[in-house]
Image (cartoon, rainbow, N blue to C red; front, side, top):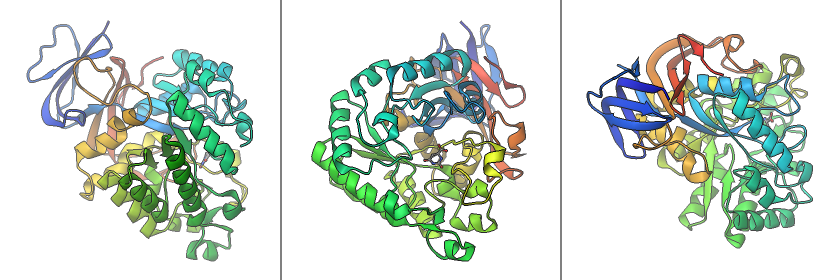
Length: 431
Ligand code: DOR
């Protein structure tokens, strides 16, 4: 199998706290050596001078749309966009068509991903049949088929009794339940954060309370059941505070935040751009500040993109009619680099939240450059400037609020299982 020598980069390995300029050798799909002056001996050499070399990014929250909505994305295009964004392992949500509530769907996704996606793909299965919030799925069979977590994602499980049983059974299976926290009655038909911006826009508001109240409920149910809860795309200061206090009490709760909830406020929506519409919505500046602080402190464990492709014709409609969600893979790194530039996170700590911490939440490989670990590596240029054009990206969709914007920070190369699958000058190389 191929040998790849990544030479002279700033190696950032959160798993071992390493932050030094050195070489990394990847061989037979695994990290073979890390150290000064490693010899090429027939290996392909990647010059990483001036770059960061880290464990490949891991994304615990993505929508790859296959099966059923391949006009938006499929496992191949999603996987290519992922590696172009530096992601080596991606976890995909169950809201496909059909829903991933049956082991045959889980197996289908895994089989297609094996042949079509250069990134490793791990499915989250539905917690209830058809995401309808009523009848639980066969969790053991879905886990056996390869599901790494359970979630009804954007379809809230409104019945607390059902959620309690979901948590109880997930504990038997030994995987977390992921909650997209939005109380349906409080959200109602809200499409932007409730506050001065929704008033100015004349659009129905979706209050922070819709998120907070569901996080509070699910933390109580987590305490009751002793299960593991993972809070998806946390966005409100109130929810952050609830998670902080639950962790202090020793509950098994983890949380993720998206690049957009770290970088944009609801003011980005003032132009009615449907590419600023997502669920949960962009929040106020104080909510963004609370998320950034909690991420820096480790109360929020990971950054996850919530990559949610939608077709142009679906987004080019009135704001209230557009589906929520934006692309995430190819802009994640430059967007979150803002926290390093603002001195809120060190490079090593950013890599921990983009990679290593995810391996503690779900059973996904990577997150370490220790010898013998998965040969999943990303090479990053922290200062390279480029202009993002979704039309030149790898997703089938274009829905990004950063279209046409100047970015600082670029993924130079992505290595999955020891194979160079993406290089910024050569594009996606396989499959
Ligand atoms: O913005 C979002 N888009 N939030 C969700 O919960 C669903 C997702 C999608 O599937 O498009």
